[in-house]
Length: 591
Image (tube, rainbow, N blue to C red; front, side):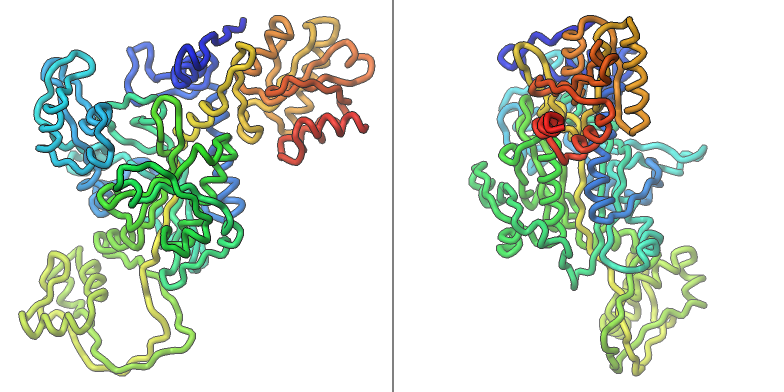
């Protein structure tokens, strides 16, 4: 039986309508409902799982297939030292306040933003300033109206132990990027030791959010797509830039934001690079790809923007960052992807912490001969002095300039390498004539990072519309969770048998199908529209006589008659984007 959604946009907001529809039709719902639920966790039902997989498949199509990016998969839990080295343990902290009555905890900056404090002002505040602002605005607990205690910083990473030892601290990854960085040497080998190359990882991540209250927009467990693209900073040119040079990017610039203005400026990719608005060609390329990707998901360009991050808003690893934002009904502008120029920050951090050389070798076109000082560690003394850290200290020593090492040793008798003092008798310094055939350097990185759950929600909200009091999910054909619905006009007289045979044929041809014979054909069409089924195929009594069927378009409700023998070819062209429904109808008529 169909339960039609009666609330339209003038009765309830789209967020409420979409969430109600999502629960009822099996797209997603809050997890653990029989135990009262747990905020920040969702379960994707049959339709939602397919839709989410299709969104992720489009990411793979764009980046893995078309650009040639590698894909990897690795563990969600990582040793604590990984995130200590990357800076996450120090920086992944948010201001939190606790209600003194019900003891519920909330993100303090989110409470301030609900009172009209801009996000950029809230993010700059110290804990004392947060406390003063909460007092000034008279903010109380949204649940029980109790008074808040003193704000404190809260680490939003899930902490655990690895194995039975309490000292073996691990963390659930808050992003998928660090797995890529720590595996860089092996990935570089997979790339035949050539730059540039990129690696994408699509998988689960964990953030112990303080008070997630925005549905799919803010979760504690979510799916992220992190793409790390490695290149030589002395050769940052992008070989695909000409393909996107004329793509227009809507950018909200830092200078504009500092004037408390939200006027978007429009630049072609070439203009943005020439004016140094975007510092790196590869970053501009991925931003253009992200814009086109959102258009494919159904979001028009005028409802997208790239927010240039202010200096205090940028992540600790970023030299330049842009957030790709989409306008949604309940929450306003919501980030769906982040674009950061991470320079060599991450690889440098892991190189220092692990002692493993993460540099790459670049051969000079013409060897360079020079005479100068060379510093070498005396490993016979390094081992006893530094034990397990000997390799790391030697690696960090090699990064220091020879002149600095010699000067420090002459002045102080030692040189400081990280936390260690290296003394004169532990190194050898000599004059040598050397021929340099190349150099070793740490690659730079640009990162486009997509929140797959947010992309899923955006696709759902932008597909949602009401026509003649009937809900339709007008998904782009590339991501529709069900491509073809099969409907016998009646469940008897052999129509059901013929319809099931046709479903089997289309399923074998690779189409995602659904069979429905319950209720009137009108009710079945309505159910299919609500589920976002792209095309409906009706098997009727004429089908038994002449082997033709009716094809119905979800969005226009137009119908055309076609022969079963031509059906697979027509559907393939339609779902490959080679023809639209109008052209499909013309092809059928011409036949």
